[in-house]
Length: 127
Image (cartoon, rainbow, N blue to C red; front, side):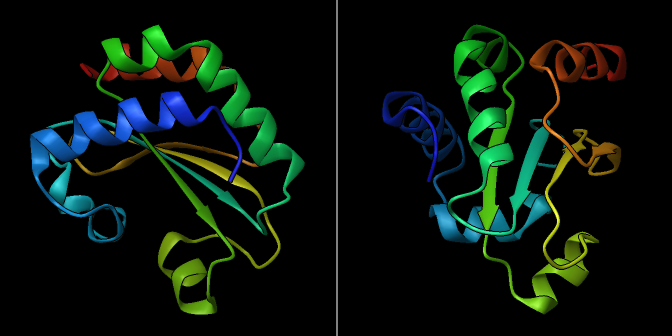
């Protein structure tokens, strides 16, 4: 997995402390976050994905904005066909999927997106 281990640890511990749910279960159930936090799914075709690394690097560099918005960042790599169907991501594709606190998809991108774009959409949606 790409990204700074410290940032991941901080984000994971904050969410786990709040929700007290194991990571693997949290990532599979959007209802856990509904009404609590916006979520950004970063879906990559594999663990060596350059777009995944670029997206995580930009989010790590903007960690203050991530934490200020309680944004939950979930990396999804090597999805099964059923998981790809569930998230609406074609096989072999990279996507960034922003989900609001209401559980609805705010927007999808097929390439890494600047954190400021995510933040402005979250702010406009009311967090």
